[in-house]
Image 1 (tube, one colour):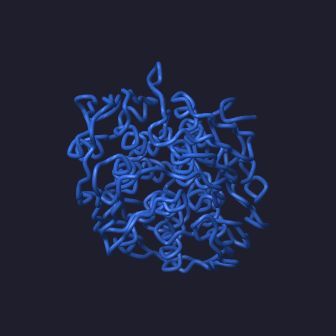
Image 2 (spheres, one colour; image 1 turned 90 degrees about the vertical axis):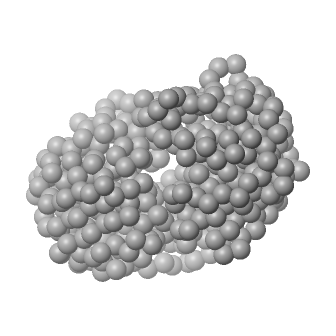
Length: 437
């Protein structure tokens, strides 16, 4: 049964997480490989591409703009058209639920010669876009959006972009990447100043496509590109997807699992530091580098966790993993405090409120603030949770069901397919009692 057949998960408590598991390919890296492959000269081959709805939306968008993309389910081949080789789509480009697609592509498309309109699903149409539109306008891009600062975004082509120096007002890899991609088309240099480190997949990926990015402390600079060169990319397993099994194995007695070939980019893996501070037994094995990205096998054993004050400097780097981390906190002894995480309010759902609602429904003591949450660790009750259409909320409470006092039913789970197709089946293989209802 597929997620389209039924949108509810039911998880029964009990069991342990064991074995060697492979989670799907990294979503962030898959997006970037597609985008740069499309505008490169020559062919690009992507191994380990995430076959999720978000990344497939990116592929479809470039196909609408004239790029030949062959996807056989295991290997993606792209015939790049060059920096200026994209063609205008006859219809608006629908990016579904993918915030990464719309924010990065807005930067890339601001330098094209043709007009583009970007739209998305109901959730994506409500997400804030002025954070990318305003700095792009300072680069001489012409864009308009709704009065609320949301999609649709209409991009007027043919404008001569100019490089800028821009200090990020929020720690956002999507904003940084948007401006770096626009910088490929901008006269001179584009320099991004970030006061908190964010994931650097775009910088690494540009180097893989033969266009170097320079970094001097917290200043990241890209110059106008003459061309990108097609290449071969090996996509590691997605750390954000691995996070759910890291927590599942940590909180479930008797667990012992290895997650293979996971991306452990240091601008991405702060969750490991947070979990270690909580007392988790996690070890990196077989560390190596592929396509410019550090990867490793992650070995996790069940552990007794204790509550902590999560260091704020780690929060931006672990922002996508917090639904899973907060479930770990709910199973820890003592109190966990999360601060500095206002960005969680503007994800696929308001993740602070969504997690609080789920905790209330399952008897976890928690208080939310504008930019964080305080959780009192203890046993989780069974109950019924609404994921609010957010894939990470749905998977987080699926993990919580492993150690709950009774079954947990999670509603509105269709969007799990955006990032983790096959989640239920892999969870069953690992030892979880989870099914569709």
